View 1 (cartoon, rainbow, N blue to C red):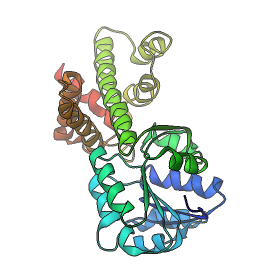
View 2 (view 1 turned 90 degrees about the horizontal axis):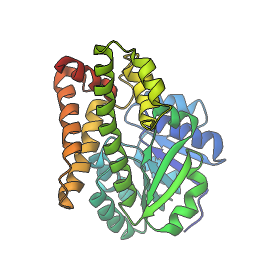
View 3 (view 1 turned 90 degrees about the vertical axis):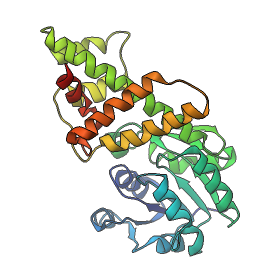
Length: 295
């Protein structure tokens, strides 16, 4: 790969802003960034970000650009559309999608960007908003292993685990299935919590004891104890409608593989019920309210 002296970041949302902040603090490189909203750009500019008005300015200044965007549609637009990375020229030579996007799109973008002389990787992330702030994300990389290793030091500014998962799109497959299991576990936790409370057992006690036994999980200790038990579902965390997008991607993969993913369909139904109930933008463990309401 070509040398990487400068970095870029496009998409400074709930996860992207703290990820970019960690690059600023730890990479030792100049970081160029932009977002459709000016507030996060201004906050990061105060910490050293070279604020850019558009994608072309980021591409002009950065050798390596990270993307953290709402969906594959925005990723494709930023990479290929008018004013996007591929058409902007500049010094950029490597693009990494850290969003959650369709695996097929990753393979298509890798091919199209390669024709423009650009290296492309998918590297979606797992864990919470707090992990993004702390720089303790889990990063799952798809693409050439040599490129993954060349970028490992930059990934480690944002996460504590960097796993190469295979070719283009493989990082997305692993991330999508990680989230599928998370949402299925969330449904189980919501049901257990509601049953316990109806049986006269304190929910916090239930989850604390479960955390010491065979049902322990990251979801229990975080989404269960920190969100479901106290009933805290902030709108600036991972919203219900984003969760629906991710589990729908998992169901698409299941259909492609001929797998009857009954558990994932049930979890998707619960998330969709939460969205219909008006919880579209609330933190996805809010599904516990739907379980409670149906009981």
